[in-house]
Length: 301
Image 1 (cartoon, rainbow, N blue to C red):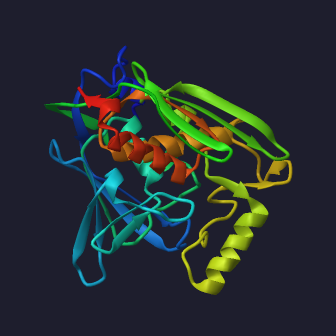
Image 2: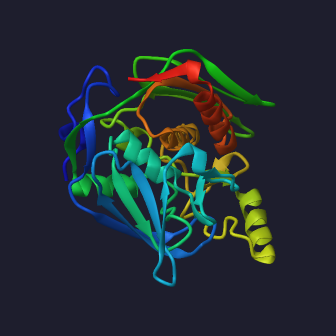
């Protein structure tokens, strides 16, 4: 299986001077959802230039609904990123979107027969493996990048998030966890390093809170954490992680994974640096909306 350093030659400008790309062939993955707990199948297929990333949800009666991966179609849901259109929902899309964005897949059709994409082990590694297994192909059409022109920021109590001008797409993230301490990660988001540095970082949460959430969801019959457990997330218990960490700073790296996935909803590669302190999906979406509504803060190049 080729590495992405072989599939994509490194360039000085990570987001500039390239063509749109898609998959060379389709691939499939299946698994249970983090919140619904339901098993579903996902097929990711090549798409034409200009198509973008589009989710197609097949309904039980044979009909389907297409939902483009766009920031203005984001629907607020607990502990995930969800998209909705015409009353149809598709949730927990952030890990797949992060992988497609980081590995420079601009056009793809994502078909599924359930409301929620699989969580797998809580990481984006299965998505990386699927894309690496089929490869990518450039399509001739140029990519237009969103270049950040000035700093835009949002905050909510102890949480803060900003984006500022930069030559490439980069993230600087910080979190502090009770009993575990402070964690920091900073660097560019590159196809050569994403599969090894960011993709393996799993979703995480406090064991007691997760179990309480599962009980609440079960009693109220709401899709909340019904598929969450030690096999699908890194569960924190006091000053340790059940089963151990994959890397000492795995938790903050997962925050970076979520940031990359959420900002993929902008629909263009980004030339800008994100600075995050205790961010979450809601704050990510708030900054995206603030940026996109401020037409003086960015340009397409």
